[in-house]
Length: 192
Length: 320
Image (tube, rainbow over all chains, first blue to last red; front, top):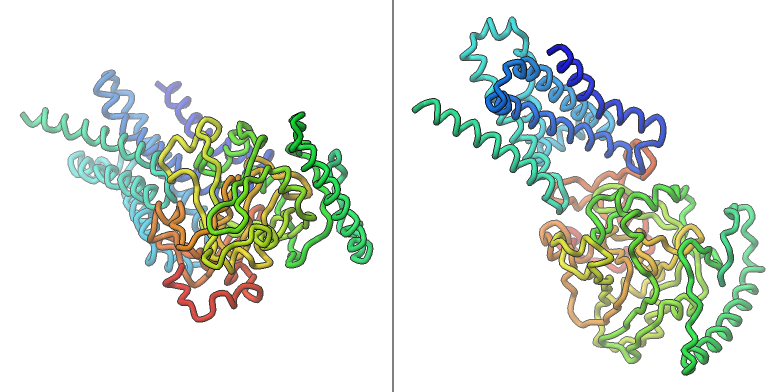
């Protein structure tokens, strides 16, 4: 079990390591700021979807150990989302709060993305065992259902920002719908 | 004239104007004679072909044309590895590799519509028709990035004179190649193919408007719109039609590819304007390729002095 968790820890760090390696060697292409923002955003979404697929996977292959992994994976999603937000604030907007405020107010993709991030914060904060105890498992589970809203927010953020080619955001949307659909079906099944 | 790739020419090595003017006349005369001789041979039944200009070959640039900026050009690497060319892919960095499949010979450019001289030109004819100038222009993409490119070409206005447009010709349309087996993006519906763009007549004949056949002293790389592309530096990049096969003179304002794709976001004029925003993002600032911080966007991309008069009294927000 420890081996799997360690392997996952390293694997999820690789996208960042790769980005840094590229930055230090071949460079990040003609538009490095864009590269950083897109890569961190992509991985935030990728890992959110991976997080969402852990419970369904656990049901299918019946391995409780996966739940232990879920917290780490979820926190990694928060990690990449934080890097994505920091890149936007620092690299794209050069810490200009005026510019950021204007962007948030005027452009839907920005406030949608920001909201999705804000929803992740209580999830990250309540990720510890202590917090699960303090909240009680039922309230904790209810709170953590927010991850569906957060991921939907991320997908809509992506849909709103692409110029014309919707294919990739639509793939993310489809995967999210399938994962959500599965959960709803299971819930219905359990209620009978 | 074509030579093997020479070492990069430094600005300090550019000879002074007097010498250039005489050389220009000499070369123009030589080209005219050669061009005439080639015409003779190309019409012969022996089927002699005009010698082709290969990719990567340097172009004999006769002069550094007017309107050039002193700003530092974008690196050749960045300019040729970060491209919007949806005919190949919507991924900017994949274009250079995918565009290798483009065959730029044989290539013809058809001039048609409201002109006295409709004609099908061979690209090599066009390449020899005018002395080539280098123009270092700013380039601004509607997405918010920009570059400085040393284009090589000839003024579109000069070519239009040769075509002799009728008084009924109010607009010029430019159409890109349609060849889905070489341009895989054309198998998708991301835009309507072939790509269509256009200019008002006075925009087309403006001295700034360039028909580019090269950049950085060399023939245009495929990913940058080989073998012939339009350069209109005061407008957003999507107006700069690449890999042109058809130039059509028309009466009515063309409905361009991007207007069809998203009429609320992309208009006909597409003049660079920091006060007229894209519905989903601001146009107030831009990021120069290779730089980290943003810079202020300039009205008409800084060419206001040269082109402002074309739009006097026009509501730039309404006619975007």
